[in-house]
Length: 264
Image 1 (cartoon, rainbow, N blue to C red):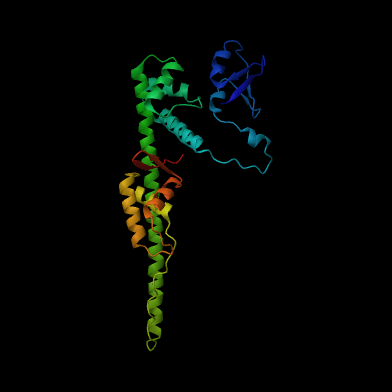
Image 2 (cartoon, one colour; image 1 turned 45 degrees about the vertical axis):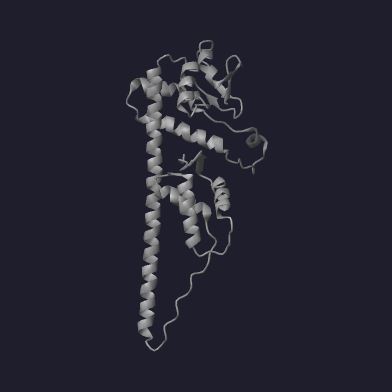
């Protein structure tokens, strides 16, 4: 939560109290209590996050670790801002602008509508529902964009590998033609490698539209594990899969479903 100090009377205000305080001190500015930056009545809403105490007192070499919950909330705020930018419904646009300054916007439909009703004093439930639908539409677009970009990267990587393989094959053919009396070398056996569980899990999810049932995902990953050349021998494959899935960053497990998290 961001806190401000009124530069006229010195009163400390939570972010959602600033608008009301402006009736008392009309032409004042506000200083953020943590970072000491100064904001006007028009710019304070953009200050949605500030430095933590660890960043403030941890020294110049301190690196803040990303909080998973905070990352999800930041991605949600990005979706709200996208909805503000692209929504054509004027009422919805103005409503979303008024809530964009809050740092704790709920990410579930029922809680979001209750938030608008209680915190924003909104009595029009139809308008609240339209606002939620606008955010949900942008969230879906962002998810599709992320999947499309990933697919394009995979295609580019595949094309590079194929070009490198073709060049190597051409070089081998040229060498063989130049030395016909030499006996051909026996093909090398596949070198066993460590099976990359997390990489395979994410790839399977992307190939299935970003979301799968855990049972189906487990079956496909274990099948690939069984057919791959690898160095490790594992007796309880299912247990290893469960462990790797829980530790797989960028993946969300919700009941029986697994999905890729959308990047911010």
